[in-house]
Amino acid sequence: MRATTELIAELRLIVGYLGEKDQACWWESGFLSNSTKTFLQPIFNRSLLLAQFCGVTAAAARVHDDGIGVGCTYHLFRLPIHLEQVIADVVREQAFCEKIQAVILSKESALSRLQGIAGGTKTGSSGPVLLGDMTGDLSSQVIEAAGLYFSAFVSNEKSLPYIKEVT
Figure (cartoon, rainbow, N blue to C red):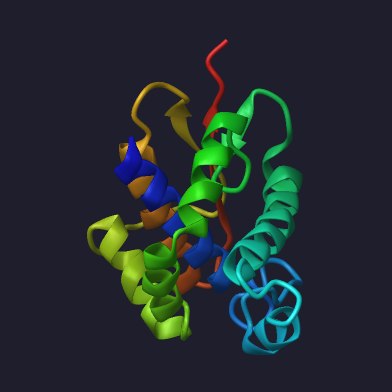
């Protein structure tokens, strides 16, 4: 479970960075940009990445919710509360912060890591894409989502992978 939550946190930050206005412009935020970092640093000295993480999550969640809909579905930027809490704990860790900040320095490094998570180049489709049901271990759905996001960013499309809630 720990490895999966770290992977989700990493994927959320990478996709969040790539989707911002300075890259693919899927959402109009710039929470992970250098200028925002400079602005937020004095205010959130010990929790800068967490503040950026929360901002980009809110911006991306809105776009995903508009495209997928809300109710009985989850996606990378809106997960069950117990997962959200564990993911936030991961983002607070210094080792994780150092690792991910090296990845989201440039579009090229972020795309390269995204491709690595996906296990190579994957073909995808644009718009909402159902990955399955919210059951047990999510690692296969996270890897599949990484492939869809990678394909979408490379082909200048917008893919919105999601998971259905088990009722």
